[in-house]
Amino acid sequence: MCVCKAVSDSDLRHAIQNLGINLSDFINDTGITTDCGICTRDVKKLYKELVGEDGKEE
Ligand code: FES
Image 1 (cartoon, rainbow, N blue to C red):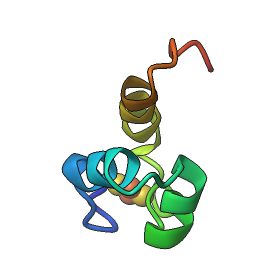
Image 2 (cartoon, protein in one colour):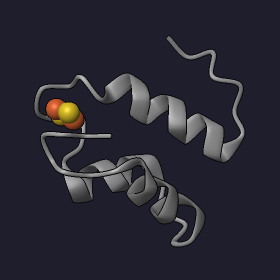
Image 3 (cartoon, helix red, strand yellow):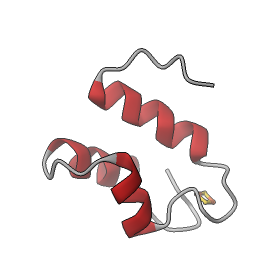
């Protein structure tokens, strides 16, 4: 998912679903989206899928 920080989508999935970590804490912990930023859209999309929001934020 995030090439710069070597974080996979399963890492994010695990953190959200099994550890109960919210997205901003996960970003703070891992640094994902803070380097090139290319992964930002995918991170937000997956997070919304995991937490069941409708994904309308632009
Ligand atoms: S791929 Fe995630 S910050 Fe570059």
